[in-house]
Length: 482
Ligand code: UD1
Ligand code: MG
Image 1 (cartoon, rainbow, N blue to C red):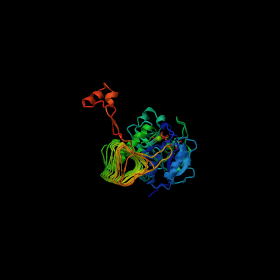
Image 2: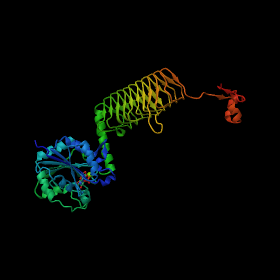
Image 3: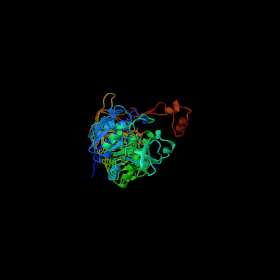
Image 4: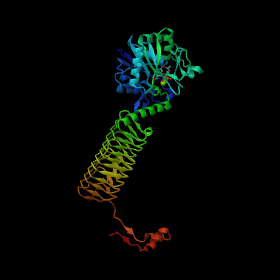
């Protein structure tokens, strides 16, 4: 079987239509730059050599590719004179004979099976050049496949050079090509920039090859959605939605319940076990891994989170953290990097946690901030407790033991330690360590100034209600003073 000698990815364009500081091919879909999707798809074809043409913002593209696809050879196209020029540059020093696959860095939905089939059909036909075409509902902006009376490919005409009849053609050039390298080289030598863009178009090679009596064909792709290009943000969103559906379908087929696939965004690389349920409006990205039986959402964002079996994360945002089996998070929790919840732990409503570990079965149920803390097992943190970790200059740590009861509205001024089995009184400002088994109390004792309202707010509704309840003005009597 014939093999693929060379693959060229065109990624040097300015991407002006994106109106972005970021080069077009680095715009992301499903958590990965478009060019990565393209390179992943061609990896399966095992080309002898892969070349990526870079130019606009090349430092950014090069730095990225060196980390993700270090084997790809980067070729610099100093001046962007069009796709034909990009290929001329890419062929310098490349093999003289063999088969080359050329595709653009902005068609992120192409899959390996489609490219393989294209290669197999091209090879089977034994032609010098093939373009992958597709019939699309809206051909605007694409190069059109012009066929002769016999239905054979005669030329590819760009949108801006097409006449009104050609604009009616809905079979488009997907920007994916296979060429005999020698035939391509000779045709490229004859390319001119006599079009309305003043660029050297790769697409013009087809008419040249035909004129020279060489064989060139358009091979139609079965699934046009794979061939869509993303030149602007609107097309990027269209491509992202198709990728989202693909990813969600694959998870659903492997046993994940996704209640509303339209509002569930799962990046490539996220691992989800069967019998996980994902409610609407959720986004899972990065190195996120969810174990069986977990419930995610609604409206939950997980960025690189390990979620244990049977855990629930509801209406919350979690980043770079570990949520143990059967743990409960939310609604409305904000869990920041470096946090670990052990099995059965709970972080409830309006709680923020950062860089902390919360032990097995421990609970932070309501309205609290936990930062730089280690909390043992079986401990309860009362509502509205604040771990005061920042003195305005440095961050400090708090250690809470096992089976501790922190009273509501405690301020734990770090660094501070509360020993196993200790309590703190509600409303305390704890600045000193609390030994195991002790009750830490740090607040002013209460006084009741009897009749104060009747004297100071005479005639008010409060005073009237107090009088009905039997209060008297009680002449400066204070309860609770020594
Ligand atoms: C191109 C095709 C069009 C096809 C469409 C499919 C040409 C002339 N037109 O149009 O027929 O329907 O793709 O998506 O080829 N690039 C370079 N150097 C350059 C110019 C472009 O590397 O000098 C790269 C771009 O970064 C991009 C790719 O080539 O990845 C295609 O260029 P783009 O400007 O997106 O062409 P389209 O207008 O989409
Ligand atoms: Mg394009």
